[in-house]
Amino acid sequence: MNILVVNDDGIETAGIRALAKALSTVADVYVCAPASQQSGKSQSISIKTEVFVEKVDFPFAKGALSTTGTPADCTKIGLQFFADQGHPIDMVYSGINHGSNLGRDTLYSGTVGAAMEGAVSGHHSVAVSVDSHQASHFDVACQLALDVIDFVLKETSADTVLNINVPDLPREEIRGLRYTVMGGRYYIDSFAPRESGGYVLDGEPGDLSELSEEYDVKAVTEGYASITPLHFDYTQYDMVEKVAGCGLTIDEK
Image (tube, rainbow, N blue to C red; front, side, top):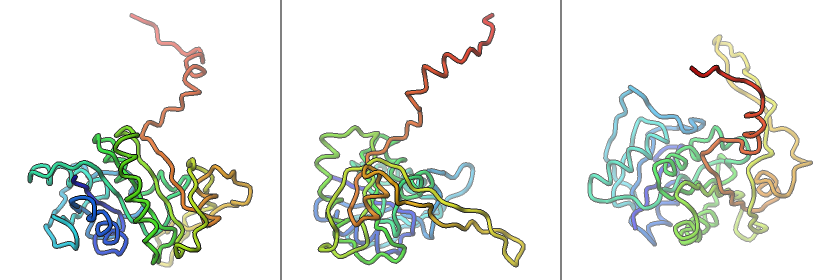
């Protein structure tokens, strides 16, 4: 089995190296990751913009590429390049991200966006994150990444992304695992002016105290790991019939 590993934090970070090492125990690992930090890029791709690609050495990988592209670019490039080299990819893993990707964060996340690009391309995909920008505990996240492989391949469709989030805690301090839904995290934020004349997005998370137990944010905040199935179809199905009945028409010719 061939697994493509991508991320948004950059190819030199500890998280992607821990994930590649873990997955190399069960598969041939191929890496394609940004040369620099690309957080918050969502599923954006580079259109009519040159992306530079460099072959690099990477521990525990059969092949690795560093690119100037976005995380989703890395997924697309990795899938194409390694297939052309005779190594068609079976699964895409994105992470391990330094920082959680929960609730509405997933809409902006380059980590989730890269995994979603895998799903759009018809590949079983998993996003993995640890809840700290200075993450140092990757063992539980790596174990969950390994544990879901058979389930993902046998029981989920290729257009599903499993989003795994784990507290940055020693294994013995993690309270357990919850299967969750996306939601609950929002921010009180604004663009703050700087002396240079520019603006920087700044803000704080809103109140989480009243969140339902089913939410991914609630689980990780309370010390649990969470797994949430995601999909790229944005359709709000329970509104389709109502919208169709709104009365708008265009005269047929």
